[in-house]
Image 1 (cartoon, helix red, strand yellow):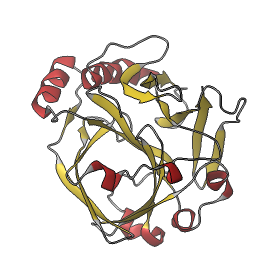
Image 2: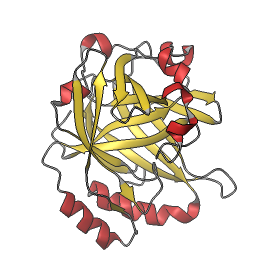
Image 3: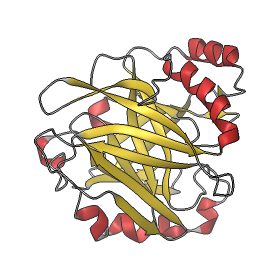
Amino acid sequence: MSHHATQLDHVIILLPYKDILNPPPWITNHFTVSPGGKHADNKTENRLILFSDGTYVELIAFINDDPEKRKGHWWDKPFGIVDFALTTQKPFDFAGLQERLEGSGSGVAYAKPVAGSRRREDGQDVKWEVTFPLGAERGEVPFWCHDVTPRERRVPVGEENTDHPCQAIGMSRVTIEVRPGSVERLGSALSAITEARRDDVHGYPVGSAISSEGEEADSWIALQPIDEGGAGHQLRLTLRLPRDGKRGLDCIEERVGDGTVFIGFEQ
């Protein structure tokens, strides 16, 4: 990942448990799936789709689709893209973040960082700290994820696991679709979170990925209004393809249970 202080870390797709154990064709036709593990709370299990820019998609499921494990969990939501995380390369300036948000008037803040962990399939423990938002629904603004154990233990990027049938090399954009009445408030929060003003075309810049030519290419958080009558907010992911990669690759729009997964591709 690049030298930018704030970066896109990962995007979470909630799936039925069977799709974690045996990923369906809409996943395997596009992506190489890497091992994950069970989380320490014994409620969820994951698999990873790793990209060469150091970002990843976390495919997560409640173990055995157990409703008791779902109950009261922050990802007790319809299937689909449910959340996304940022990280920082420098020490996390939590106090500065809180101060900026307080000044934003958005009513969004963050709870103090809490410990998280999972055991990999090879028996190694992976540890991190997560910082969750207050005053916004999960997925309306990002959470933060900071490694305690070495990052490569959580994100073991290598040539063999970042070579995808769709040729994706990283994340270009996370789009948050919200009701029109929320755009101004969440926009103020995102400006404070990213320490950046909104670019009218792309959204809010969050660090960068490396393109296939080795140049830096920004990643973005976009905020878009959806119909008042529609569901609450939803997330879309746009992946970056190399400039000389596949053209005209159809976006993934996959109905999964009570939700839909939207993944687009761009060069």
